[in-house]
Each structure stands twice: as C-alpha cells, then as structure tokens.
Image 1 (tube, helix red, strand yellow):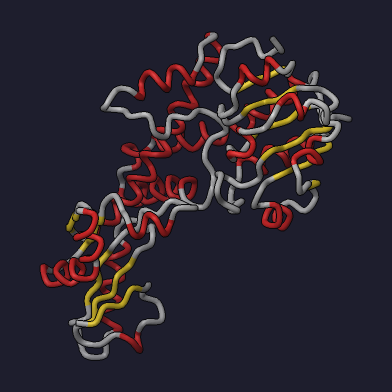
Image 2: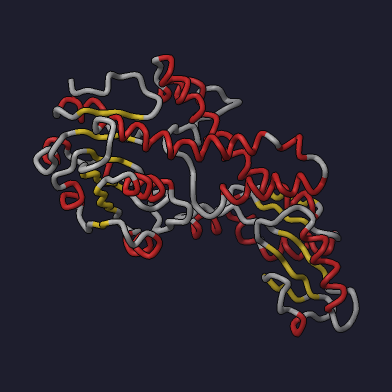
Length: 348
C-alpha cells in the first residue's frame, strides 16, 4: 500500500489502488467524511484508495521537537489495515518514546484537535476573566493562578493572565468550532466559546485603557514604547497579534508609538507600516512616557530597569503579560501596573 501525506485537492493523478491519503489540518468535523467521498470519485481504479486523519499538535516555535517527540499520536481510520500502516510509519517515534497511540474514527480524530484548542483558549480566557475580578476586588491573579494550578485537576499551564491569545490557530479555531456547532444544530453546547472569544478580545481594549490612565487620560503628545510585536515569544508570527493591535489602537488615539521585537519587525512592518519600529530596545524606549510589555520575550524579562530608566522620559511600565519582576522595577523607581494585580502600581 502506498502512503501519501497530503491534502486531497490535486491528488487525482496520484491516487491508485491501495493508496492511503493522510490529512493533518485543523478542519470542521465532517470534513474527512466528505473528502473520503471525493477520493472515491477521483480514484481511477475504484474505491480502494482510502483516507486517514492524523491531526498535528505542533506548537509554533517547537514544531520539530513536537514532531519527533509528540505527547500523543491520534489517527482516524476506516479500517484496521490503515491503522497498521500508520503504526509502521510512526514506529520509530512509538518505539523510542513510548508515545500514546489513539486510533479512532475520522470524526473523533477531527474533534480531538479542535477540542484541544478550544479547551486551551477557554483556560486562558478563564484566568483573564479572573484577572478582571482581581482588579475590581483588589486581588492578585498571579497568586490565584499559582494556587489553583497546584490542583491536579486543573494544572498550572495556560493560567498566565495577561493580554490574551492571538496567532493563526486559537482565534480562528474557536470561531470555526462554534460555527460548525451551529450547522450541526448544537450551538447551545458551544455557546460559551463566543464569550471565550469576547473575553480574549476585551483584554486588548483593557490594556489600552490602563495604558491611557497611566499617562494621564490621553495619548496625545505621549511617547509609547511597545516591547513585542509577535503574538508569542520565540516566533516572528504577527497574525492576529494582540501586541500590534494594542500598538495600532494607541496610535489611532494620538500616541507616538515605537515598537521593538527581537524577530518580528519585518513582518510587523508589512502588516502595520504606519507604526514606528526600532531595532534595539534603548532606541524604542528613548524619551518614552510609558513602556508596554506586550510579548514575553526572555530578553524583556532580563532587562535592567536601573539602566533603562536613563533612556525614558517617565519611568512607567505596564506589564500586560505579568512576566516581569515587579519588585525589581519598583525598587528602581518605576511606576508599575500589571493586569489583575493588586500592588499599588506606583514606585516603592
């Protein structure tokens, strides 16, 4: 049996008897069934060509590591023979790492991928909703997250409150999942995903409002340094970047915005050419009235607040990712604000 790892479109010349076509994309449930029917119609020698579904769970910036050492392998198949073929294909990984193997039907394999993304998005939006409550009640969301993360039923990952998620996967996946639920007539079951999406988008507005408050209620005439353009660290991806969305919103309100990012400047400039960009942090922060920490690159965490104070006009910083050592910045004389935290926000 031949094995083709590809999407169905354009495969007609390659489909022969005993061909296994494997799809990997995140798709609405039911896609594999429709593609199976198309393969039956395309195959020149009848319906012996079959389709399996093998969703990928690759994290951006860690794709090679996650390919070679996945935490699970999921395959959707229509016959035991296809399952055997895929076990042979992945034998080196299964034998070396003892990776869990989950073999199921096509629809379930599709649902595993989109359900995982929907759950992660929900967990992120949950802790961001708690951050709003902490702001109102005078609590500290980082302590709440740490405490509930010790519960084995919850776990600590994806409980970092802040600016929210972006990128090319989570936002579109939760919207597509809800739309598919509507098509299937079960929209009530996934209605909460609309609020998950709305909570996430409100984080950007919340950050803009807090930044405006820190500079006295107006961005007019204010120099705003933005640290981060990529939607996440260790990536140059700016698709649906919360950082760039915030930077653009502040510019529209009259702020003079200058953006720094270790890897994503070129991509950011292509999407938001009207923003100013700097290749080094000191230049981005020169004469700044406020610094916004919007992407949690390690080099931003390692900044020396004493040294950076000499570059700015006003030592004020908004940590929208809750990743900076607040005590160190306050000790250096900075006014600090972070999302969902109850410290005074003024220099110690």
